[in-house]
Image (cartoon, rainbow, N blue to C red; front, side, top):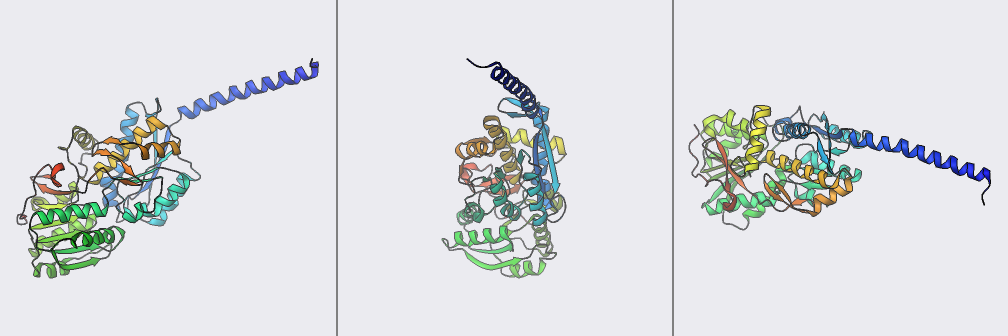
Length: 400
């Protein structure tokens, strides 16, 4: 039989416990009602901005708007508004890393969205993995990054070996004898250049010129004239958006017009069509979708154009939206527990506007390498044949 003193103590503890539970329940409710805080740093200024502001940040803004218009992001059956916290990384690796360190460390955002480009993703991925944040990257084209085996990193783009093998297969199928290669001297350029050379070794195609160039190049005409003098069947430019436009404009100026003119990244951008004008006809590059490829792709294309008054690009924009689709599906099923999110993304096949996406480690192994080409105002998928929306036009028409 307990004493009155012990009974009183027991009653007090029960009352304290009930009070604590009463306090905890509103706290849990408040946490469930607060916005989902989604943080990222991306280039709004500097040389990366041309790609980032076409391919990625518009998709982040469109996604947040669509989620909030639906009542919020579905978090295991409960809708919660999305709060985007976006920063300018100024096209600087150090600024990018410092920004994400703050977002994941002191700010403790619920989710992160990746920066633009292979270099920034290569630098950030180990940090995001250490903090345990799933990182769904639509513009990281790096086999080296895939081979780091970071469990929280997922790359949506087709990797260099897949993209360059598709290109070489297309060249062989169209009886290409000689090519010249111009490449950006950084991670993106070097990895794709190496993958291209590896694929070419299995063919009889002769490379008449291999030439690298630095970030920020202002004049490619001397190199292009040298290449023109060798009269290759195909020109392959592994180039960033400003350089893709520069190489195209200067090729037009000097009358360099091979049977196949391939340059990327940036060829699939609507701004490329605007700047080059009618001369875009027959220009090829990296591309994997357009509004014809699926009903979902058409719906996305129309929504993007309605919100921003401009079209998305026909390669990585689609992969960026696919990444947002996968993230949305994962949060609906697994909530905001980041380990559960990672496991859901890693273990399942995901329907997206670029088709089904499935990961082997960090790599999307479901999307084949592909080539696109401007034809009658649309960037058509021309290779491989099973996913093509049109046949390759060759020889390329003269620059208009």
